[in-house]
Length: 338
Image (cartoon, rainbow, N blue to C red):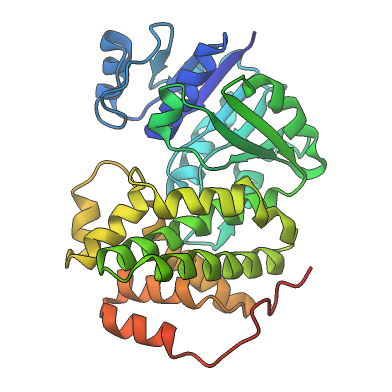
């Protein structure tokens, strides 16, 4: 068994760390908040970010980067995407030269419009393609932490790192598939959060199951267009990091992004609502980054545009709906032909 370091003690990071311990690894999780470290060490709980889930007693926690990654065979970065640059820079001097690195954060850096692979290429330049992979798929943290069945995908260039990480995390109730398309896996993991906000708004307005299915399907099309424009493989979006994660996040009651959409539909101000929560709804930030990136690349992403306008520019919901429903007719697979 191996030593695993998890950087980021949000719900998903905590769930990955708990999974690692339960399949026999030695795991330490890094938390910025001292109260989270104390809670994990003393009560074997993460009451702030993953309440009501009992964690393995063997799981350790620390706020010391060097202590967390010392001797680690695998380091999993799981901070909110907007903090990945700063946190990976903090850890850079401590990363063992032989450690595999997986990124389980999902998003696009808003300030640079870069995928997280580019961010890590700048902050961890010594970690090459043979050691760096991206982990995604339809996973609610609470269910993984509780040991419910789940499938994920690890993606890296050439699948070298992905296939090294695969046996470290694979388990009878946690299947890990490999992929050679880290760009597609990242784009899917990021954009699905934006689309989940849209389905939450639709459900909150009572627009029905037809509308929800349309948002998921047409959202998958625009997610694929963005991915292809960045060099992704179209078929990746028919897999776990694409349609799989999208369906889960857009329909599941545990989805923070869908919940944000429901709150907006009820009249809540999105920024005010999010400020009252400790956990991050990535779709709020990713909507701005994805829409700006789409404009830069000339990619048509109408649902993403309306989510951005509603969340950040306070566009009325009836106006956003009118814009989407009254667009000129199109070919269904325009821009994503295989």
